[in-house]
Image (cartoon, rainbow, N blue to C red; front, side, top):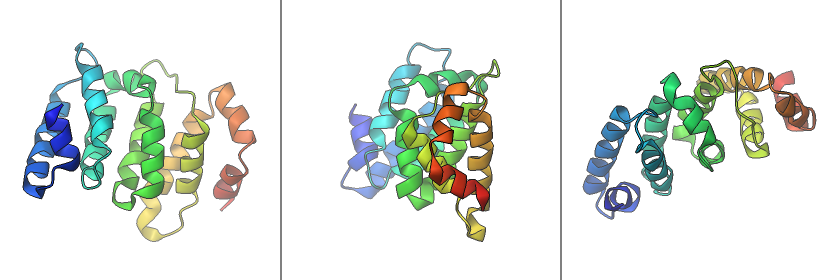
Length: 171
């Protein structure tokens, strides 16, 4: 708990960076096959509260999501996908990793995907509508995520109601 507090909001940036390094290293060794994985996800979600920690924590979550065995637990962890969606909208230097994490999590081992919230769909629509050259990877990841999420009937119904999604994809 104190590691997470230091990683999120320690007043001394050097201590915060060190705590973030330890947290990220721990995240690289802990996966969904061990019982403490939920505790790690809780710690990472809590660490997202730190203004200077967001990009580092999102990078750790992207690393977690790159392992297929972790994707289901990431998708099912309460509030995690919505937090990534909000970050993709508000934190430019973490945007691409947040959207890539949503993309990786969309590809479950069994071919299934997650039920996307309105928050996630809105963030993906915004990312898909980015037009600057520097945002090409974010846009591509968002469109690919939308395509995968559309395999679920409940996601398709939500997408049909989203005018911002249609506008973004029309570009």
